[in-house]
Image: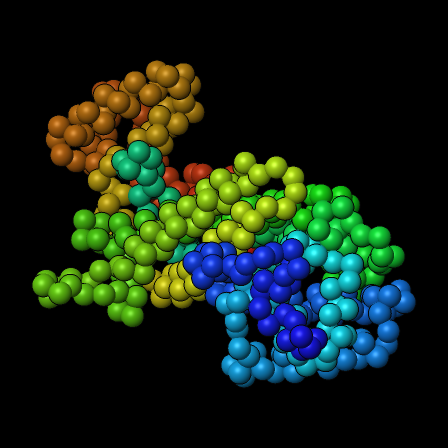
Length: 466
């Protein structure tokens, strides 16, 4: 058989050992080319760096290197134009590209695999691919933060009822509430940077599992491909996927943060709350109820968090029972990893757009804050500053709230004489304390909801993000 046809069938990569061809069912079951072909750019980049190193080390001739470069350039053009024929017989992206290269340049294509295995090749490809995806996700996380900051800038003075246990607790600035999510996404951005550092290590040169007898210059390949260093143990290099696990963990945490925000958007838009409205382009209608405007984007973002968390659980389970070193199980790492990246990217894009178009109903928010005796703690703090122990102040205020509930009024609507009946130290100045805006202004410490503090936090985030 001619060299150009030797890799036309996957089985021929190891045909001398086998006495019968692979069954069609097994071929379909074991093939990954339908999904791992998205690694093709990383595969070609890794192969070119490997070939250049082989030539520099005197393992492959300069003519072979030029032929490999020429062949890879043609393969790149064929894939980009959609003319490349992906063959199931060749199982994966690696053998498909190698086979086509051999067809194009002959023996030079076969020499490319010197000193490497598909085991270290695929580990390298996935790291290269994921590194590039990480670099596209980082700006999206920043855009998500900026969208929240931009809404916050307009609503520093807007009062929102803060909740604990889904009960009205204390008034907060709506901007302060949004900035809580900015903090979450900022930590996600930090986690992503950490993932990138640990992803950016080169496995190539580990070969199948034990390294190789060829005098490879692994550090040269690492520099060529922009890696920070090389994997130091050949067994670990080809077998572990903890960088993928760590990425999936980062993505799951980020999607949980997205889900929490999405849940609040769904609640805030409901008629029971009526705190915000969303642009029509982020909503859908009902097939039977013509009055409905459903926040489907937020609901789907909330739902897709389960999808990403599920991928993390799948990847953890995939790895937990594997002995060293490479096992075919690891073929199953790609689809969940690919889908995690795709889902996170699309979700961050659409959520940032949707958040940027939120219409805030400030009056409804403020009215809701008046319904839950949100300034009760302020009254207790007021009494403490008058000399009452906090536990005693807490008890006094509980009686006052009980009275207000029975009368159907807010604490601020109780007459001064009634309030003084609970404690004689209460004076006319209590009504400023019991106001929603007075409550906000009183919490003027780092991290607090006072407008002065919120504006300082917005400025800090602006400086960091702009």
